[in-house]
Each structure stands twice: as structure tokens, then as C-alpha cells.
Image 1 (tube, rainbow, N blue to C red):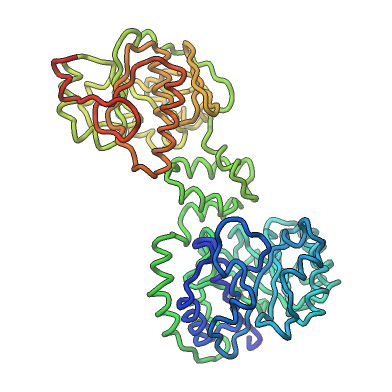
Image 2 (cartoon, one colour):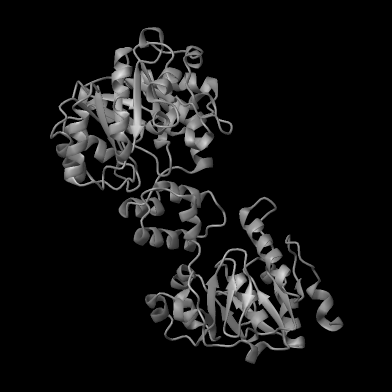
Amino acid sequence: MSEVMILDCTLRDGGYYNKWNFPLDVTNNYLTAMQASGVDIVELGLRSLNNRGFKGANAFTSDSYIRSLTLPSGLDIAVMINASELLGDLPLTSALEKLFPSDAEYSPVSVVRIACHVHEFVKALPASDWLKARGYIVGFNLMQVADRSQEEIEALSLEASRYPLDVLYFADSMGSMDPVQTSLILSWLRKHWQGAMGIHTHDNMGLALPNTLQAAKEGVTWLDATVTGMGRGPGNARTEELVIEVADLRSQSINMVPLMGVIKKYFQPLKNKCGWGSNPYYYLSGKYGIHPTYIQEMLSDSRYTEEDILAAISHLKEEGGKKFSINDLDATRCFYQNEAKGDWAPAGLIEGREVLILGGGPGVAEHKAAIENYIRLKKPIVIALNTQSSVEQTLIDIRVACHPMRLRADCQVHTTLSQPLITPASTLPEDVVNSLEDCVLFDFGLTVKSDTFSFGLTSAVVPNSLVISYALAIATSGRAERMLLAGFDGYGAGDRRTLEMQKLLQTYSAVSSKDIFSVTPTIYNIPTISIYAMQENT
């Protein structure tokens, strides 16, 4: 255990949250804390040739930047490069010459790590010859190996043994490993690789530290961690915990005061703002081998409700989500891709009638009395979205719901509500339909196609799976006289949900001449009239 080394990569892995833009004073305080707490190597950031969009100094980690820092004695400096940059348009040696213009003797950097996917590994390995010849300590980080077969991992081990690496890392990229699997993968990598080994763990399932300590018991000597676990998605093993465990193993005395100080002043407030760290969504992504960036993107996008996130996880579990794709993420919100006909025609209920749609915003409860008076007086067809129940139940004619995960969550509530439920029943998952067996279901077909509204007798095509899209389609297919909206307050001018709703309304207005009015306050760009002026005047 005396050979164990801690490599802290906070300013590299954590940079995905703040564009690698760490204040200089914070960086210097962090470096002091690392030295005092027993960290051996600090990976200060990436070294990159890509210059698209603003990124801070730690995205490039030049020698001149490093020299501007106050570097404590006894702390080695590392940088990481992505293998994809070595295998791009430039020849490998040309890329390396641009990234490392100085030999290690004249650079503050002593350790260079190359992060690569399995398919990049063999092509990137010759970089180790070039870097070693210039005096650098070289590590390779193999990503996403947890789901590889024994044969594949042993073949990677053989390839590594043919090059002068100083350390071979493997990363639990999906956060899906447990200590038993950690030991197993280590045994496969050791089939041919006899040099030092390292591990980089993710905390999806709360096992980052246990997996790291298990690897140390198995002889792994390079251990990664980040302050407060700062890293993409659920983050990593936490430095403040790992240094305590390693100090015990080393029988070493460390000073935690500077580390706890920089956590309190900078990293904890940033964590509160950015939200890294494990949660049930990340746990599920680890369990099913789904890339954690899917979860991180959804949690940072206000359009994704709890139902959306769980539905996306369910979709990616079946379709595969090991490699992040923004297009695949967008597809997880569209549940009704195939043409659906339905068997219920809303015209029998709605034709020639005014329709009042009750949304989920606070405007319904705030103006409840006026809305109820209007319903009693003018008797519109009242459609409640999902389980909206702010107004008196006897005044609601029908309910509309279409999101599979929302229906799963609300199935027990729906069975207690008296109104018929309009839903695309014939295309819902079987378990959802079964959970609604005590409800009166009207099957109105739903197909989702981007930027499209079209209306049939028993089905419609809408631009997304939002329940308001479905409700507008039902009212339009039913040939409503006009539509009134209550409880569509909006989410704020810059919120993505507001922008999505605004686009939806614009798409609808382009294909329909039906009048739509909001009768309670709204920030959406639609005509607004007051529910209070409608009691006698309409």
C-alpha cells in the first residue's frame, strides 16, 4: 500500500460543469489543499487543439498557464488528452508536437494520460513511444470496458504490453461496476499487462469509493478522485474520503483543513448550483449501462419532467444508451412514432361546442371561483389535463392523458376519478392499459411527427407527446367552436418549456383557424381575455 498514489483530476473532470474556467485564486488554494491532504498527482486539466466556444485555461492547460500557478513541492502535474484528437485530421506525431512543444525536462507537466475508447486504443498506443522518448510518464485510460467480454479485455491487455506505458487505467465510465466485477476485470487485464494499473470510478450506484478501495486491495496503485466527486453526471470517488482511507493504509498523517476550507468556499456552493452527485436516475443509468451524460442533460433541461426522465431511461435500457447522442436523447421524448388510428371520434361530444382546457398551472386554483361560475353559466365542454382537479369534479367532462410514464404514475388516481379518460389506448404499453382497466377509456389515436399538426376523425398527428398537443388535436378533430385555456401560466421567459410551448402554439396556428384564448394570465403569445368579464358578456 505504500506504493499507492492518489491522482486528483477535479480541474479536468469537473470542468464539464464550468467550461474549465476555475478562478486563479481557487486553483492555488486547491493545489495547497491537495499537497496537505496527501494527494500525489494533480491533473490540472485537458490539453486540447479544439478551440470551439469559450473554455477556460484548464481546457488547454498550457505550460505558461501552469507556470502562473503556485505549485507546492512534491506535487506532480498531469494533463489529459483525448485519443480522438490524436486520431483526427493531423498525423498522430504532428498532433503531439502541437500539444507538447517541450520535452518533459522543460515542462511543468510530468504525467500525460490519454483517454480512449476501446476502438481507439490500438491506433493511439504509438503515442506512448513519442511521449516516453520526450521524458513524460505515460498513462492510458481505457473507457467503457465494464461491458466488454473477457476475450476483448485480454486482447486489450496484450496490445498494451507491447508499448512502454507507465500505467494502464480502466474507467468505470457507466458507473455500473461493483467490487466483484472490479476484481474480475482486473484479473483479465493482468493476463498480459504486468505494469502498474489505475482505476477511475463513477458514482452512479454509490460504489465509486468501494470499487476504488477494492482495486487497491487487488494491487492497483494509481487511484483517481475528485473534490466532492466533481465530474460529469454522478461524479467520481470523492477526494476528501479517499485521502482518509489511503492515509490509513499508508499510516500517514495528513492535514485536511485546507481541503475542507476550499470545499466550503468554492466546491460545495458550485455543487449546489450544478448538481453533480448520484441520485436515483444516475443509479438506474449505472444499473442499465446508460451513459450518464443522458441523465445530466435531462436534469439540466427544464423540459424534462420526472416522467420524461424515467421514460427515457426505460427507452435507452431497451434500445441501448452506452454512447451519448443528442439525437437519441430527443427521440426518447417521442413515444408515438408509428401511425395510430384510434376508435373514438370526439366530434360526437364536441362538435359546435366551446371547449375549456384546464392546464396544470397555478392560474386554475387562483381563479377557481370565476372558472366554476363560467362553466355553470356557459356549459363548455371541460377537458382536464392528466389529473388536474382544482375545480369541482362534477364540472369536468373528460380527461386527457398520453404520456406513458405519467399514466403509470397517475394510474391509481385515474381509477378514483369519475370522468372518461381519452388516451391513445391501442398504442400504450400493455402494463399501462392494464393499470387503467377500471377507467372508461376513449381511444383517440396519436402519432408524433416533428413540426406537424394534422387531424383525422379518430386520430391526429402532433409535433410532440405533450398532453396539451394531444388536447388541442382532440378539440380540433372534434370541430370545437373555439378553445379557452386556463392554467397555462408559463415557466418564465428563458425556460425551455416556455419556448417549446410557444413553438407548439405557432405550429398549431399555422394549420388551424380555430380561435384560442387564454382566460387566465399567461406569458404565451396567444390572445388573452379575462374569465371575470365572461360571466355575462359572452
